[in-house]
Image (cartoon, rainbow, N blue to C red; front, side):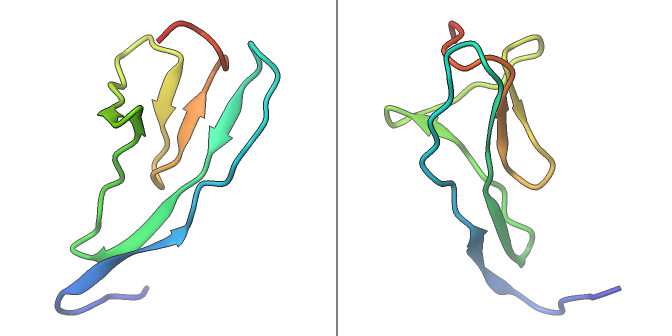
Length: 75
């Protein structure tokens, strides 16, 4: 087990990449960050934070990525 002591600024270790996906197909946008305290990742569309609501087609993944059940589905 690795334990980081003290404070370390957040750093993105995996950036999202441009992805082309057929409409109505699933897609994952990966993103990972590290630091201490553990950073959180916030996703935006058109400079507005995305709302991840229960039952929506978007799911935030544990490492910080974003999963779309259906691309092009109504948000």
